[in-house]
Structures are given as C-alpha cells and as structure tokens.
Image (cartoon, rainbow, N blue to C red; front, side, top):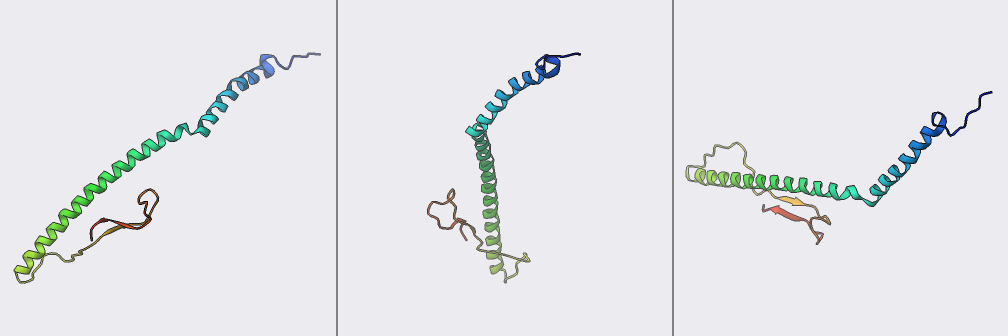
Length: 116
C-alpha cells in the first residue's frame, strides 16, 4: 500500500502555501477598502470632473448672455424699422432655477443661476 503524507507539496502543500499567502493579502485589501482609502481618490476625481463641468456651464452662460444681447439689439432695431424682425421665434426672460440641496444651498430655498 502506498501512503503519502497529506501535507506534502504535491498533495495539499501547494494549496496550503497559496492560502497562507493569499489570506493576509485579501484581508489587507479588505481592510483598505473598509477604511475608505479608495474614496479619497474617487472624491478628488469627482471634484475635478464637476469643476470641469461647471466651467463648461459658465461658458454656456456667457454664450446665452451674448445671444440675449444680440436678440435685444435686433428687437430694438426692429422696433425702429416698422416692427419687422428676422427671427421666427424669440423667447425672452428665461431663468435657471435649482432645487434646494444640502451641497448647493444651505438655506434650503431654490435659487436662480441666471436672471430671468
């Protein structure tokens, strides 16, 4: 009869060694995740992304203001030229209103970003 020790490398030794290495590694990784080491980087990336989005919105608001000035000038010119205006549709006095949020407005009241 051939009997072998169950802890030899070929039988279970390789698996026990990999378990001895993997268990502390996975446990350490789990602790890092629980402590939130990833969240700092994610928050930093999210903040950078949101600041880039707000700069795009600022540019858009400048373009909206420029268009508003163009339409006002065209309306003034049309009023002096017998009321003929080249635009098919003119929408005026629009406003952006944001709902209250803990991060945006501490007072809890809606606020306007662009005057209407």
